[in-house]
Length: 477
Image (cartoon, rainbow, N blue to C red; front, side, top):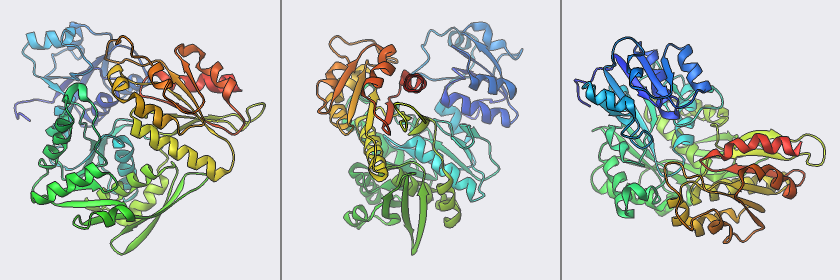
């Protein structure tokens, strides 16, 4: 980061977003002047203005003067904010430095033990678990995560401890801005090919990330993921300090990688799962409120990250048992308590890649199996035309783990529609009972036709499908 960048007055374009709002909180806690703008009002913006930020709804050049003086720096997301945004144009004309969110985060982490959580899947959950575990161990870390912790309802905090915990986003290679003390890689699977173009380029960014470690830093890799384990092996050969975590079976497959935490047992329960994590010679029991082997592995990574920054293992494990989740990660949205659909539970999940869909649906099936009743019904909204086209068969295979499937129309986000690419190309490959529901307004009524008592209904995807959960509960009630 250029030392000339002055963070005394910071203007954030898109301040209401999950990432931007968190950094705004930390800036406010550090006594900086914070201004910003967003396309729409929200509870997040209300919280920021209550904390002292000055925020405009809508984008205009005049927003740069919300605090009276011009800002010393403007922060933007290159992916979400167009280059002709009037505030960006005005900042350039005034000679105000414009930086990315990742640049600001890197600056805020200077001087801390930097714990960076990376990987194709599981970043937000693992980061959140790490934070809760470290808080329970009394470390009071600073943190910035991509979702809101269910327990505290916040996505960022300026702590009193020496550690700063954050997600390292690979989607645009911005993770290469950081200098981690602990770098965790949960898994690596080709994604974001609109940016990287090739699988090789996507894999390479994680090698480059490992090489960004501080001189006394540690790379932590999941041994249950072949590509993360391979990264560990390559990094070891380059002289990087590496620790692995994973199931006993995975640990035995990679004898050359030193073991940090071993997941020795996992049992599904009606509330989640019971795991035993072996650290050194100690077996630490953890009761996880969110089901699934992927969550137990995330907990293993969080435990190891906490130990590496000085946390006491038993206290970290106790913290993991208190972790109640992150918004939109197997988040319970409500239960039908009486009537025709009594016992139906509606959950919402952010899963938007085939591997994530598979992990969540596997966990849901394990939950109904442990309870001995109900089925798994999923309403899935594909995210991005490019991802749908690339992985249609894989999405269909993963969705076929559910008992009933609704495939919604694609949520295009930043992409324009592609002729012939619709949710139908996934639906036609699903092997379980399936409905293609292109009309979003009909999702709740369609689910009423397929739901049965005690079912788990999952709304799933990275787009607007999260808004359907409330309508489904109303329809079934």
